[in-house]
Image (cartoon, rainbow, N blue to C red):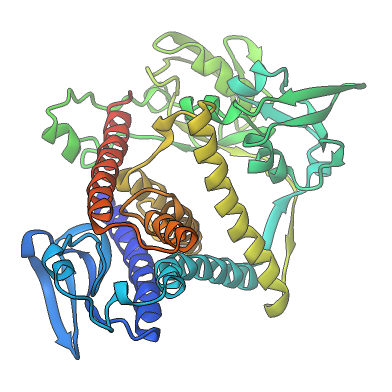
Length: 462
């Protein structure tokens, strides 16, 4: 059921964006009197389709292959590879008969709509829910530092005062793309000493390789045990993928439940080491995978000792109640929200560009490329409208950027050939365009296979 909810959210989000993207091409083409023959959500590969109807000269429909969508524009070499039509004399209503500048606008139409949609989504989210942020100056216990943060010299309890000399007001800025993509110098207070710690511009690659290891976070105090994981006969069964790939299934273990730890208990120590903060507890437990540990806890004023074996994941199966950092909320008016939302959308676009740039230069692993499987997992197994629209807005900006890449078969590839035509004042030959379309198709298929391979390997923990 969880998988269906994930897939459903992904399908809904992508369908909205694909329809709007193709609508951009459609409206631009019609505005210049160019005939559009088909408007499809998903691809009707080999002529198979789920649904279609015709209105005027246009066939509208839904294909069976959910890898995007398309509009078939008369007189254009596109996904359909309709060479027969291209062999006929050019007609005044065809794409190839129009001036280069009009064709350029038609090809940019989808990208422009994706940008507008992204800005609109972030604008409406900002107007409706405002912005929340953690007040950095109120983090009296400083930060909790993961493995990667420790590698660059940070320590638990450090307080970040500034980034590149600018005072840090919102803690979230310390883990934003400004730091993770570009690198930065952090001004850090450790006890009474002020230190300057450099964040390398390759750190995002390290974080991506260690999904379970964080960089930095606010430091939380352990207050009490909120929930203890317990056996569930229905849930503790092999998943669909376990059965499909015949993976060895091991029933989950519940160390805390088996040892007798209960909600409301307050953890005092692990293996004799006093526990005040969650990072201390997590570090001590994770260092003892598949080993016995002794935990002392306070229950209704009485100290109790528990002996248990840590799971292979380095957990004992509890959800603690943690102190929460002080936050602030900012509301924005309808007009005031527009530049804020536009800035969020533009930052997403720029981050995509930086990410591709880092992959090209080797500073970011290509294994960070995700397929629809990975994106569906991000949507999650429960529907939250804020999360849904936030992710959809992010994907809209990502689609705008990806379609702008100069890869034959994508809008950006068509744009490159049109710009060449405008410079040399004569169109690129149809044979070149046809071959480029085939090359682009092969590249895109390879990228898709690579992305799916990434996510499948991740599902096996590799």
